[in-house]
Length: 332
Image (tube, rainbow, N blue to C red; front, side, top):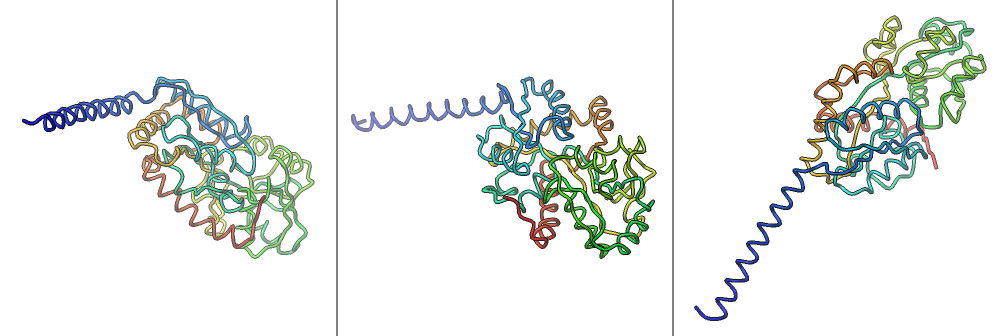
């Protein structure tokens, strides 16, 4: 063997040893996930339904994953600031996003964003579902959806519907009602849900589309009147309230569902560990009880999978974006 050949053989052996070592390190790295603090970004202020739901979930996931989980609120611009924070994060499973339909579907069609909701995120699981419903001031002379439609047609452009911001779930719900029933009324935008509910209770506005879990306490107290649920089946927390379809207006189904995402490119085994921790939490009786108290329904097992949730998210964007863009809703 020549000296040159011997050198080449030695180099190849060293390279093989290094390749094996790097492979072992990479495998070990993936196997020890998670090994440090995980951050869940909520693109809304603290104290709301999304924040409460996330903290309930995070409390259980800490035990499953064996690491601290911090919930970071990044509100602003319809939730797009928080989502941008997630899409720019490292694809290592240590920064996650939890949000609802308004942020992860509607806002992408109404705000000038620099990310793609389907290409720049890795779906982990659908977390919960709660429908929107129509609630009205108690002095409004209607008791159900058919009577509301008749009253709106008899009073075109005179009624007022409160909404929490342009392009919000309540706004899109209101547009859907107009399109389905041929009615016309004015939208009154508010900065927050508490303010619009305050004016509805006081009778300053006529009705609103609201996340059902938000206004359930006011309905139970008799401060506002439920008109119809915007879901395909009756809502478990108020089964006495009929759906829009039952009242003869099919297609009016909209919910503020919640989901969890990771940055695009997060390894599949990491997504799998996160998904397992979510599924474990959603099966826990204590978590289920807290969700039920918040008016949140647990999604089907299929939609709890990354693949099932990805298909659901895509279908929701394909359904709602044409409606939103046809209404020319724009936010800056």
